Each structure stands twice: as structure tokens, then as C-alpha cells.
Length: 311
Image 1 (cartoon, rainbow, N blue to C red):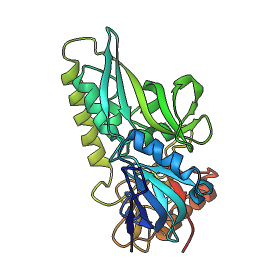
Image 2: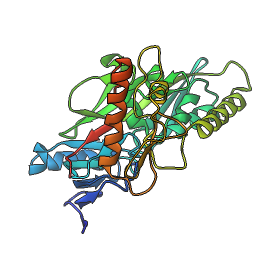
Image 3: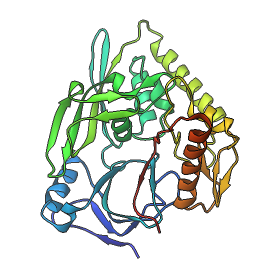
């Protein structure tokens, strides 16, 4: 059974082991060796300083928000997982200048909430965040994007934390940004960002942005299998093409392995129809990659992260 523990002097909660199936959007997979829910940013830093002198310091450390881009294999993962979405949830307006609005958002905030916050304060240009099903931390880590927008296009600076609990402020220029990729200082995780979003040109900016968010969400509902557990887009789009088109052209829509299925609604989604294992999902990922490579000579790159060991 999961044992709830408290480390001396800390305010968060440590559980070991912890099933990850209930914390990832696919609702499948094994357990992590331990998981920590920090009380806030200071508690997170204290936790990392504490474990730096224990056996945990030699194990992998993963930061997880809503688990919308993650698959943990059925054998589990020998690691410490830190959950951010209950603690790192502060969002505030830093400044509202003539041309730009600066918003501070911590890593555990859901991306759609940032989109709405920006719209309510008269900003235009953050609406696309409403279509990203994860948190700010995940969006920063992979330069998440949709509907023509990308996270790092509106990032001016970030806050990071290392394994010793040191928090740093870093400019966006310290990172190399690409399509669904971010490279920066090693062994640091994102804990917050400052978004710089253009102010709308007229007094109707709030209404226009909120309407655009509604349109994007309606488009997402109409085109994606949101009624079934999934992890969003499984593959990055190759240059000048779409992963969904390639998978559909291979007649893979509706293909099933166990309880997992390549969605009939959107071919770049794999859904859990009920009782799917992580192995079922990974088998479909491999099938799609191998079939597309064989038919088109194109190597599909995963957007989703796979960690852990096979059962």
C-alpha cells in the first residue's frame, strides 16, 4: 500500500510508492518509487535540499503537472516524482504598459487558465494556450503550441530550480528554442515564467480574445477525442506535413492493441478505451512509427515522454 509520510521540517506530503496511472492523462502505467507534493515554492526548494544528502540524490527526478504528455511503463519508474499542480499555482499581473502586458505564472498553472487571464487583462496573443491540455511547466519544457502559436514566442524570462533547491531567474535568450524542443542549462526544471503579451489595440480586446478562446476550444472539441483518456498529440508534425495525415494514410485509424486504440477521430491521438496498459499504448506508438517509416520513409518523432521499465 502507499504509505503517506512527512519529512522532518517540510510541509508537503511524500508517498512511496505511488501509482502513476491516476496522475497521467492516459490513466495507465506503473508506480514511481516515491512522489512528493510540495506545499509551495519554498517547500519545494527545502525538499530538494533535504534529499540532496540522501539516497534519492542518485535517482532520476521528474516534475509532473497534469501528466498530459507522459507515459510510465507498467514496470514503474525508479525515481522521485514531484507534482507541481497543487502547489505552484500563483498567477498575477506584473505590469500593464501601453503596448505589452506582463504576466507571472507558476509551473503548476494550467495553460488554458493563463490564456483566459491574459484575455481578461486586455492582452491579445496568448489565446492559443487554451488549446494546450497541460500546465505552464510542461508547456515551457517542450515549447508546446497549437493553432499557430508557440509557448516561447511570448516568454520573456523563467524561473528554474536545480536538484540542490537553488532557484534562478533566467532570460529567454539563455535557451535554444525549436519546434517542440527547448535546450538550456542542465539539471534545472521550470517553476515559473513571465509572459510578455501584446496589449490589444482597441477597447474590445477582452471580448475579442475571449471569443477567440471559445472558438479554439470548440475546434478542439470537434476534432479531438477528448471524451477518452489520451495524451494529446503523440507525434510531432514532420516538416511540411502532418503526423495525423501520414498515420491515416497508412490505414491505421481504429487499430487496437489491448485497450488502446489509434483514435478514429484524430489519427495522431492514442486513446485508452478501457483497461489499456502502458505496453498497449507503446505498442501502438511503435506500430505507427514503423508503418509510416516503411510507407513514406519518414521518421515520426514522439511528443510524449516515455519513462520507466517494462513489466
